[in-house]
Length: 105
Image 1 (spheres, rainbow, N blue to C red):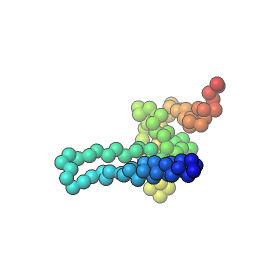
Image 2: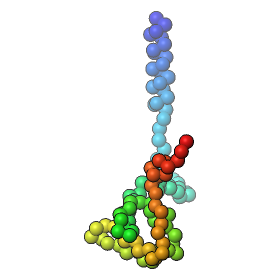
Image 3: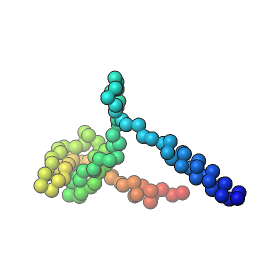
Image 4: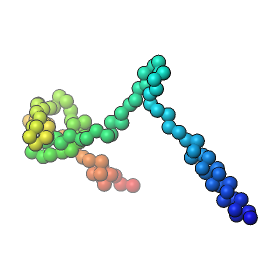
């Protein structure tokens, strides 16, 4: 009898909690102020970048010094950005997995 009562109470509370959760819509017809919705920037596709004859994906542009970049072109047939660097500049580009391998704990 106790087991049946316990199961009934647990299912009652469990269903009551899930039934009470309703999502509010982002916008309604009676809104007077606009709501700002921020897009998560991690959802963007990462571009392919070609520098010094090697192809990189993604965040390689963030680690370059802007004053050391000579030109940037786009090759639409290969869908790649061509980055030409100044002659004396040799950046060291490492991925996060390479950085994790080099860390000694």
